[in-house]
Length: 208
Image (tube, rainbow, N blue to C red; front, side, top):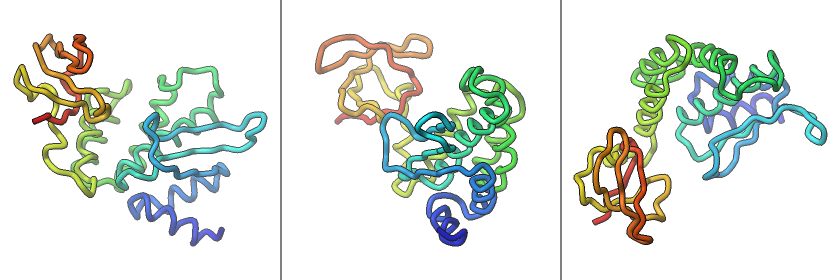
């Protein structure tokens, strides 16, 4: 595949300003970039060279909007950078990885729209990276989905007790909100009559 063909494929999945630097990164580290179909178990991963798999590989789900795709890709590129510098004997998302991710996000900041870039600048201001701001970034990224509607931002905390709902990421189960306890809700599983603790920030769909 020629460089032009490779870049044309990248341009289908990520913001245009990111194509050249991402291509250069993949070439520098001889990375096989695998763009997959939707996987419910993960958004991306990184595999380092090992017996039976003697090359660098990054996979990213191809069903995301361009800015989500780039965020996941940078997450995995940070794993590669961390492995290059520190090997395997570290925590997967410890200080070393956070520093690499932070540097990459700052480098690619101009590739994101202003609302996302503002949050990323706050997120990368210090280590440890803020889980609270990370959740805000994830929520804001969803605004760029082609089929986004404001109801996609509905969380359990916004429901009244007694409301029946499904969790967006696990829609097969039906719940009823019973009572809020600090950051979580006591909810009743309507298919098994068991009680569950569900995070108040869980994205939900109201069942009419």
